[in-house]
Amino acid sequence: MEELKVYEGKMNKTLEVLQSDYAAIRAGRANPHVLDKIKVDYYGTPTPIQQVGNISVPEARMIVIQPWEKSLLKAVEKAILTSELGINPNNDGNCIRLVFPEMTEERRKEVAKDVKKKGDAAKVAIRNIRRDANDAFKKMEKAGEMSEDDLKEATEKMQKLTDKMFEKVDKAVEEKTKEIMTV
Image (cartoon, rainbow, N blue to C red; front, side, top):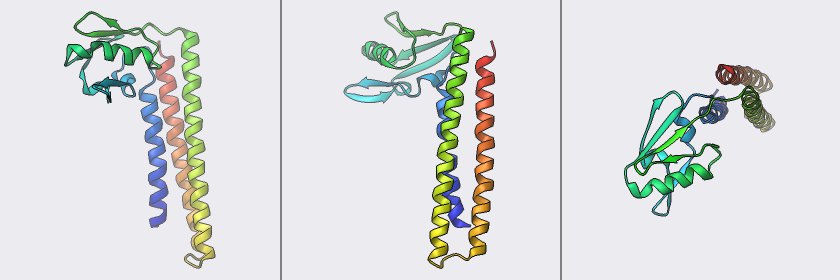
């Protein structure tokens, strides 16, 4: 059914957003994706940090940012300080080093809770998409564009798709939680 494709696309988008959120959560090791949402003021334009310099991970718990222009060091440093990263950048005049401290057990549990919350929010979004789809199918049936049997089949397929998406969300939550809790 063509109608299902639209809603499947929306559900997949929800899953992509969840996975990009998870990529930005740090799990003890330095991951350059934690910088994905940070924007630097580049001559008055908010620009992703990846577009103003090289980002490397020379050690397991360190990220080095080497701006292409030295004049950007202060702007990059400010962007990191005002972000929700919670790490103080070390500026040596050439590059910026971010040293990630080892996460405490308490902090790991907090982050794991946050991961679960994001997973639950994704499930709510998927349920809302399912509800919208089922409402649309009912309207089509009322308008005579769909038979009663087609309506039943469409809602069953929508439920199977929803279940499949829930499994993917649960798997993503489980994997990220495991990554966070691994010392």
